[in-house]
Length: 330
Image (tube, rainbow, N blue to C red; front, side, top):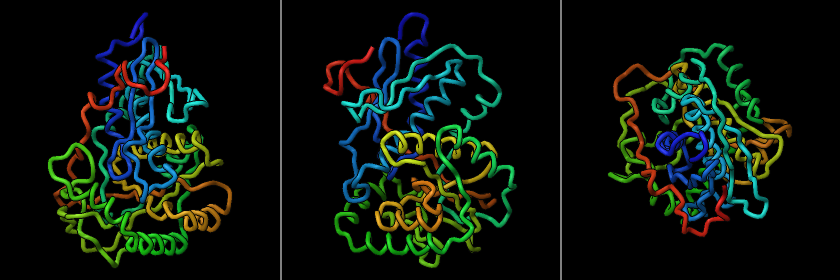
């Protein structure tokens, strides 16, 4: 970058941290372009999941999480981001343009950035220790700052019903099963869900988990899952709203990690349109569009925490100057 802006080494370090963001099936559907005065985020539709995510909602949310990770990393490095979401209406895959101004990071900024490398998706059962109400309030406050709402789900029956229906529909969908098998049970890959990160299916679970291939992660917890269940929603359901939902999800995940809580995103019930509508009506009472659900709680104290999941190298994620991916920004 030029004219007193951060050098490319700083920007690339921040983009590497941004790549630690969670994404559906860990497909990492984002591309970045470093321009003279800005950084640009693009949706990579080549990594779409047509059976799992036919309307591309999940992958836009995933990109929103990466955008927020970038903002957190740059802020901790002394550069406050100014984000222009979907800056070119003619190019909906150009999700964000980020300009940077000097900023003195606070201890909160630095601590939030440290959570990027510590965060894991933890699919184990959580303990019965309760989460203080103040923490849940903090999640809601930070999500609201990014244009989303967070609600604790006390009556889980609508979500249980939606999860069972979604799981049944997907179990009978050959294209979905093939897609899931292609992106899970992996060894030595830079993307997808590794076998070492997924516990074996537990049919008696309150909310059925995805049936990832080749599960190898051992969950010694024999007790029921005591996770709190949250839903993250937005007032609209357009591209910008979904991007903001991803940013809010990232903020909640990093905040929870900093507190010491374990987290696991749940999106399968929302991938079936009719079930998503029911959750909107029965859980959010029509006040918001549900974009993701989140299990949060205190992890078991037993050894064997989830290992770090792999990430694609930054060289694969940077847009080359000769690539036809929108007009070259300045």
